[in-house]
Image: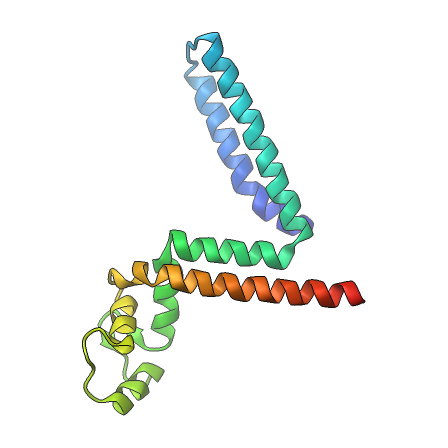
Length: 158
């Protein structure tokens, strides 16, 4: 648990330290109302970060699932494209000897707009990678939710 907390807390602390260093180096003249609002926002952000860390400590599997799902939505190229590349949907086309090549041999001529064509476009890093990110993330979210519910149910019976 401490390792997970450290991993989650590191970027939050680094960002907080960078902001503090920047403000110390370049003090701002702010009206009291703005200063009060900034202090309240900072305190609220620290409180939210603390709750996120606490949630992650108490719900490891769910927190990991949420993080991966968010990563797919925020940066689909970091998740979807490498996974498609593993199956042989590469930047230069279908990779010889791959799962995609076997599927292509079975399909024969690929029709534009077909699932195979969409996967190939996404594997090449095309715009489709961003388009399919939402349904992929939704599917991943459903899997994470189902797995977490099953885990909690089994855990409650132990």
